[in-house]
Amino acid sequence: MQLARLLTEIYDIAWEKSTVKPMSRRFILQYLPQLIKLDKLEVFTYSFKNFDRDENMSFLLSVPELWESMRLQDWVTLMKLLSPRPNITIFDATGCYSDIIFFIKWLNLDNLQLTISLDDL
Image (cartoon, rainbow, N blue to C red):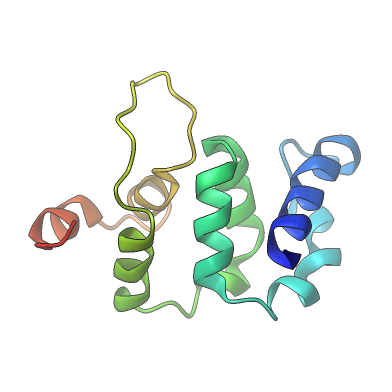
């Protein structure tokens, strides 16, 4: 699978070659042409399910080209693709809730209220 291979390569090599950990925009720019050709919801779903929270936050902040044009319905679709989510503790670094953390912390939007309002989540 091209998506899994590309994201695994990005995350693995970032620790070795990126000057900022876990990854920097400067590092990720070399992969941007490949990333923008992929379905962004598939990219985020795979990333959030397979990599930890800090790596996902760094990834999201490094590639605004992938999410800046997303509409509310795209975020809702992403939430549905990530459901059902595992129960986690406060110290769990899983990336399964990266969309919610990003939405609240970096976009300053309360998607918890949105999530609660959706019947099928």
